[in-house]
Amino acid sequence: MSYLLLYDPLCIPDDREGFQFLDPTRIVYIESVGHYCNIYCTGNLHYKSVSLSLKKIEALLPPDMFLRVHRSYMVSRLYIRQMNRSITRVYCLGDVTICIGETYQAGLARRFGIER
Image 1 (cartoon, rainbow, N blue to C red):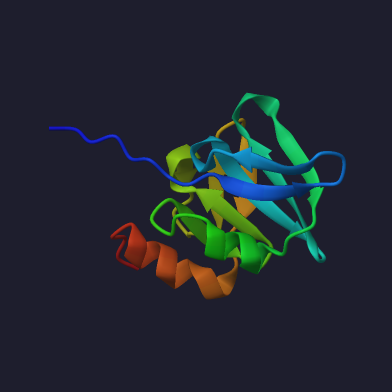
Image 2: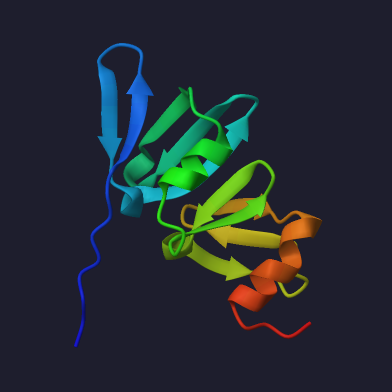
């Protein structure tokens, strides 16, 4: 039996129109740049300089879908293709390589059932 999971859209501020609603299942990864974030999605869609902190976005997203891998990055579990053996890099859809911060390595290993 399979289940369709539905998630609330992420509401992001848009200076021109007010707010945009983004389906979290389309987000590949999120990059923090100071007090702003860049959100990269499938289909080469991206939102630059979103005026929300990574911590705020993390609180709004489904915790079962997103992983914090670095103080400046979150990735969607849906789009992780590979992780290196030393758990220092994660490879996502579109040949994106993201470094995994030291403080996040043990947690990721546990999350994926990897013995170190």
